[in-house]
Length: 284
Ligand code: NAI
Image 1: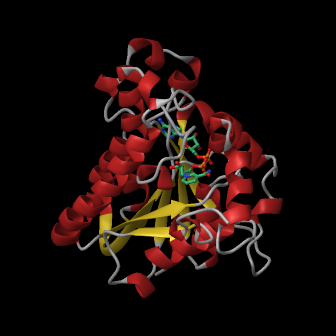
Image 2 (image 1 turned 120 degrees about the vertical axis):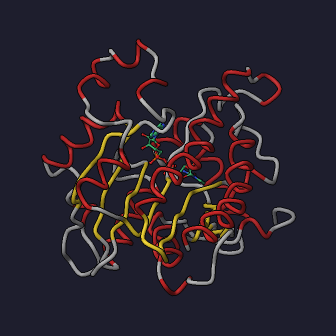
């Protein structure tokens, strides 16, 4: 049987989640997607109308098949946590079962093998940490760090032993990257630390591997919202050991490797997929 993957955090064909889905599909995995509730409608409509068909093409010429798209919001664990104004919001009221994604996947398919977390959100990302509010900081942690703990916690019971989970992190967790504010650098530090602790817990209890990819800059929708992405891409081109554009596909392929039996002894790691930029001490 082929492997089944659930990828949380795809709402268009520009981000790392989409590229990871493609690499996993190319390797023979069945693809399930979790899309943020407010973005679900437009994503599904675009998918149906063929807007992504060009970017669905796999190396063998076939089109990536997406078996099912689920609505999800990674900042809520159950319906009781959802504030009234969100619950009654048109986009949320129109979606179904979006707080019980793992349960819905269990009902539909029974189990999965691969879990990918490719989402982040920090409402105050453009503010320096010194100017970040408590709410902004906690919101960044909730959407970008605890969201992974919660996702894994909910999916682990339906993950087959030998399965793997992967998240996406950024070097701002360990080095100063001015402009990556609002507590997002803190959230990525937490995500990396949790990768180690969760690798232990999910490894011992369920034989599940947990790794994170520290990706270089990509002009995704989320990154464009931060505002400094073009500068980071130029900086990487000028200073990284490999002076070439970083393709989302390269991160996708690394994720497919980490999710595969080729990586069966790799867990609790941060894997850099950044043209080597992380290894530089000074720009030259
Ligand atoms: P993206 O825009 O393709 O993906 C972010 C996704 O998060 C979007 O689909 C958005 O709808 C979703 N999202 C936001 N809040 C959510 C919530 N509460 N519940 C569910 N989904 C939610 O952008 P990108 O850049 O591909 O981001 C994917 C991951 O890669 C993130 O963890 C990001 O921090 C990480 N990353 C991105 C880098 C870049 O330069 N683009 C560099 C290093 C890491």
